Length: 595
Image 1: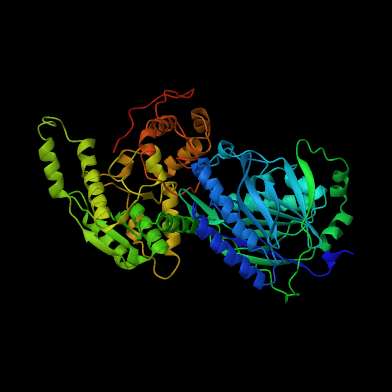
Image 2: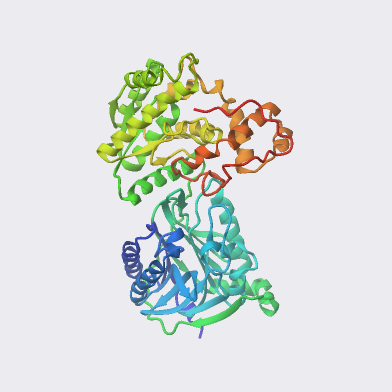
């Protein structure tokens, strides 16, 4: 008897926002989601990758006590699996440690899958911690054969999903901790749709959401039909319980019409991967629940997607650290601080954001007006702390040492460092986290001041090029009524206002010219010759490359910030500080600008 035809299999995908290391809190919330799913008549619920521990736990994985405790909390999920199957990510211990998925049902651990393909590129370091899996179990549950895999396993066309499909899996569940960057969702969904079509199986892809240090997870969990169509999707960057009914008879229908999977099953070379079927025993299915519509949320795209990632990343960084509830930042009347303030308000609420105006003799009246207008539009409180008295005191102390030397970068940087000191003093006194306001273009070229505008706990715009800052400001002003960011902020030339009539273009190429060079050199590893061949001015390319290469020591001391691009400074791009390599065709022009 084909029990899969009795009624559709109801699955739930828990798009979940765990906290790294909060084993008790994560597990309690997961048990609650299991209970909700059971009440909705779900036969099975799947959670994201390593959701018990949070992802990525990094060197917590080197602590034996952490591994043991994680196993103890998995037992709670096993106990909760009455009348519903639970698939959840955890760390397994079997001689070595494995990135694993548990399959639980009726209060028993029916089987464990170990991740086969361990990513070790970009932000991933899984070879540092885990042993790779060797088995590809297919779980026989409620008359349905189910293959479980983890994240990277789905990116290989002949990998575990293919093996499970050729051994009869009708439903493939892939649990993920897939971090966000611009453009990733579209290419990822294309790949997952291809796996579903190649396997002629349903593919349930569940991702986590929320922020963890520099990473943001975008969610966008989805269920794909055997023809690769998205039949249900969770929203972007939000927790969600996605419930979907699957007619498993459709899988047989597709496979009878397309014999490729059947043909591969006759002769697929499995290498060192062992396929095995795991019987889960009888399952007490809940009474036939009423039909449910399958939600198919429209994913965010473009500036809306990036802006939401920044808001979620900021909110979770502040919330999950547990040491702060409010933030403080310098309001200069410029575009970077304006965008950072808007993101902070949307992440934390205006009552938890404090703006500090710190004018000097070089601060224009327009900048003060713009900062005040922004603060009033956002509804945040402000402090006015003029810095000229402190600057005069510093210069008096240094007068003898600087005697007969012309003023320059040192005097400019004093102002930035005074401002950094004032913000840190407010942080110490009131328990506010300092948000830095610098962007990726400035960090890349070293156009920033150590212990000045780089001082703080979190760099919201660390991976946002200057040209994208403008785009995000326009987007923020387009939503929710009158835009809070003054139009003059977006039209005036950007300036640090550390000397009379200063503008950024005194030290840097125009940002529309600079940012494409930085994208090519930093994110795409283009050579100097390739950048010049692409039409960029040779002298400008050499100057920009010199600035990037000699500013690594600054970036290494900067605050963490949210990964948005394909290659962010920090976890993504790890360059030596002491480094004399100069690519062929390089001709250093002048000296790096220091601020």
